[in-house]
Image (cartoon, rainbow, N blue to C red):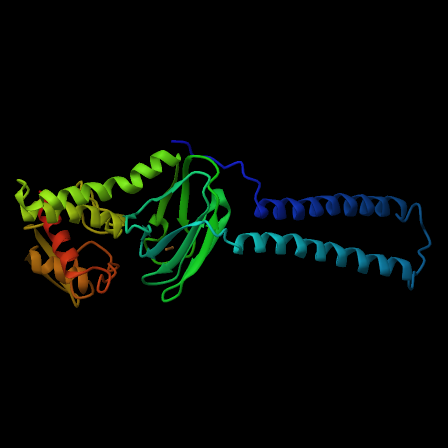
Length: 319
Ligand code: CUA
């Protein structure tokens, strides 16, 4: 996997270098004039100062020149803004849901992932929203950034010009897990993308056909779904499945475990069962496990009853 910067010339870069060019030129000009004045009009060389009252030519120059410069900067910025806001009509739409503290990307065929997978050299349109608080989607390699606002859809587009793996950050402080709200943009060769895009859907169909007859029990199937859900729904941003605690307790071995929980400042010991997991998913504010901050976001409206059952099955299976 390559982590790098795409070669694409980008209007954000053009604007940046245009302003940088002007700034550097002015820095040198100003410094040169300043040094000349310090030297030429020192007390030694110029013992009798003269009072210059006005100079119309100079005043016109230092009004007109900066006005032109500022308008030029505006023009370059405006062109870039237009480019960023004008989505090519053939762009592939991908829905983005930001939540504390993970990302879900939903494709046209219903496929979901917590990594943004895109085919190379095809424009992509991101339709962005948030399930809870303000977040901001930022892909530095493609110089794009947009707020994720609950109850509103914002958008961005970009052209992934070469295969590779690029960072995708949340760049708006959104709570204690903000710094963990990181994922990747995987720019894949067309064929790889195609097989990924259609691949798992086929598997699911095949699974449904033989489904009941196969050896897999209902619980095992649910648990399999649960394993996918904790990725896609972002549980893994705070919970691990390998026994190490993160922002929240690990899922491994938690089912049936004795935990000290805190309710209204009162500690007591409980055994983690289905009811407790469900309560924590929907009403995390009631009880929390001792030693962890009260930051679990409620999943009410985020997960269906079926999905909750699947996650519970999966947690049960992690012994
Ligand atoms: Cu989401 Cu910071």
